[in-house]
Structure formats: structure tokens, C-alpha cells
Amino acid sequence: MGKKSATSLTSSSPPSLWRRYRLALVIISLLALTWLLFDHQSLTLEDQVMVSRLNKELTILKNQLQNVRKQIRGWSIVEEDDPVNVERRNAVRDAMIHAWTCYEKYAWGHDELQPQTKDATDSFGGLGATLVDSLDTLYIMGLDQQFQRAREWVASSLDFNKNYGASVFETTIRVIGGLLSAYDLSEDKLFLDKARDIADRLLPAWDTPSGIPYNIINLMYGDAHNPKWAGGKSILADAASEQLEFIALSQRTKDPKYQQKVEYVIKEFHKIFPADGLLPIYLDPHTGTMSKSKITFGALGDSFYEYLLKAWIQGNKTAAVKHYREMWETSMEGLKSLTRRTTPSSFAYICEKIGNSLIDKMDELACFAPGMLALGSSGYDPGQAEKMLSLAEEVILSLHGLVIISIREHLQNWLRRTITFSLDRKSL
Image (cartoon, rainbow, N blue to C red; front, side, top):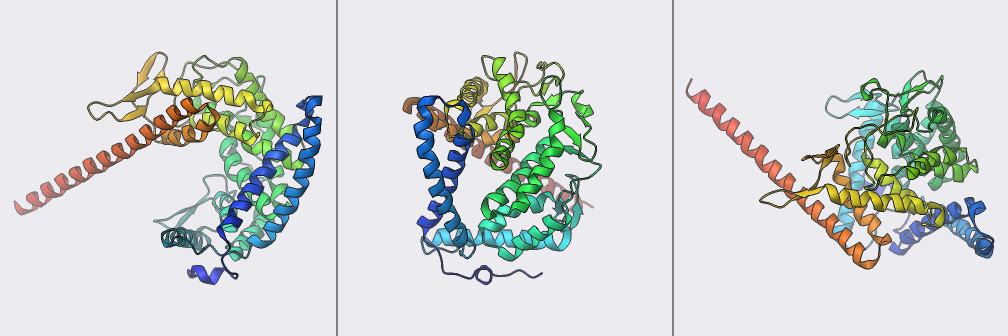
């Protein structure tokens, strides 16, 4: 299929910017109110008047969201505002069209496309990870034909009854998350039904003595285990980063079992949370104890801290999710204790830790931390919020500086090798 221009893929006049903001506000408000009403059993009698008012507001928001959904499909990505913004949006959309066209041509229905060899791979068990994870992007960008073809593939070919050991974490964030996003935007129940199907296949992973899930489960037979290289232990980031998707699924299906499974893990962590808020990357699913292993905001640890903050936001920052925020703030004090600076350039970075020993390494996946700090700063008082924003800015600027130095060093090494090679050829 040839690449199409942006104008050939839309049919209506450009929407005003406020309408897009309204859509975002309506969706966020709807999700927040749904959470609060879903958890109404935990409210006191004094809150019942508020619940009644929120029920009325929720009905109004649902009607508004329905009206906005009817309009979004014809929107053009081009808006008459700053020409630089228009140019950037067009470039992003064109890049998506190019990438998606190549995926359709060379790897349709497979998990990933290898761009250089044009080979398709199924690194996530053949669940169409790229396709499912892109559904919301296709919808938001107004790529209607591409979205419909992807929807048809989900309806006819997405089969979870596979004799395959799936990663609970990866399947949750990519497949359940992708399906729920598509459902929220389109209201097509196909996506919700598929999300529930795969979630039900993942649930037995939580059937452990401690409630801490195994990280791998066979989608056909329900046999769960942990990877051998982890020594039979569950991985922190994998075992405690499913709250957002499973809570959202419970809200939409009105079935609390998904939320109960994932929240039990956090509640148990809350009981034994260390003073510095830093957890090792390996956990024992049988005893619930934490092994003496590395502490990191990078790979195998990162998303645990991210989800603490986002679950608090998802829960509308209510008393029901207060413990998420408390745990996150404790962990941020731990993060500050791991922050060091290089000499003489004074670049800030976040160390790793084993026992009482710091490791002067900042994993590439820890680069999300500045964004997390900025997102969470609004929950502090003004003085502390400013400190967290300053730390976020310092780390991100340091990362930029380190990247520049790394690129310079690579270029110098490349030039040195090239010159040496040329001199060697001349001497022959």
C-alpha cells in the first residue's frame, strides 16, 4: 500500500483547539468520577450527598463524551494555529503513516517488524502487540481506514488460546492497555471483551501464597512460573506494575476481581514498606519476603515506582488511594539518597544500590525519572514541589549533557579508527 498524504486521509474541516482540550477534559473527568463511584462502598455516610451529585455530573459527562466521539472521527490533524506546530504535527503523523504502512506490508498481525531486514517477529507470543498497542494512536490521528483494518484483525484473528508462556507484565501493558484504550475511544465492546479474555488468562499468576504474582503464565493451560534466570523469584517491576490496567478493567466490566488481585500486592507491600521506600528487584512469591538484590530505578524496578504515582492519579487522589501517594513520596526520598553528581562536570545521576554499596551506574530505563518527578510534584506543598521540579530539571539536563559527551566520544573514536585505517592503506 502506498503512502498517502495527510490531506487524503481526512474528510472534514479542522476542529478548534478548545474542542480537543474539551475531549481530554471530558475523558479524564469521566474516568476519575467512574473510579470514585466504583469505590463508593469505602465512603462515609457524610459523602453520600457528594456521590449523588457526582452521579448527576457523571451522566452529563457521559452525554458530552458521546457527542464528542461522534465528531472526532472526521477531525483533521491540521489546525490553523502556529505554523511550527502544524509542521510538527504533520511530521509526526506522516511518520506514523510510514511506519504503519510498512508494518501492514511486511509484518501484519505479528508482534514486531524488524525495519532493516523487513522480517516479522513474534516476541510477545504472536498476540499482534504492535497492532493492538497502536489502536488508540490510529483512532486519535483519524486514520480511519487503518483503524478499521486493525479492528477486523482483532475480531477475526486475535486468539489468546495459545500454548505460550506469556509475560504477565508485557501482556498487561501492551495488550490489555491497548485494548482498553481502543474501547474507551471507540466504545466498541469487541475490545473490552478481548481485554477481559486475556486478563482472565493472566489472573492465575496471582494465585501464590503471598499474592505476589508469578511473571510468566501459559495462556492455554494457566501454568505460571518465574524465569529461571531470576532464581525462581518474582521481578519487582513485573509483579507490581499491573494496577492501572486491571483497575481500569474492573471499572469498565463492573467486576472487582481484577482490581482486588493487583491491589492486594500493594497493600501487602504497604505493610512492610522500608523507611527509604526502595525495594529490591527480586521478591519471593511464596513467602512475600524481599531478597537481597539490586535496588534500581532502571530495568526490573522502574515501573513499580511509576505505577505508585499513576495509580494515585487514576484514583482521583482520594483517600482510597492515599497509600499509593504515601509510598511514592517515601520512595522519592530514597531516590534523592541515590542521587550523585559527576566531577568535575557536576552532572546529576541516579545510582543503583546493593546492600549498603552504591553503584555508579544510571540505567537507561531510569531516564523516565525526571518526568515522574515533574508529574508528581503537584501533590506537594509549593516549596517541596519546587524542589522536586528542580531535581527533575537537573537530572534531565544532566542526561542531555551526558548524551552529548557520549556522542562526541563515539565520533572521536570513529574518526580515530577511520584515520588509522586510511594511514594503514596508504602504507601498503
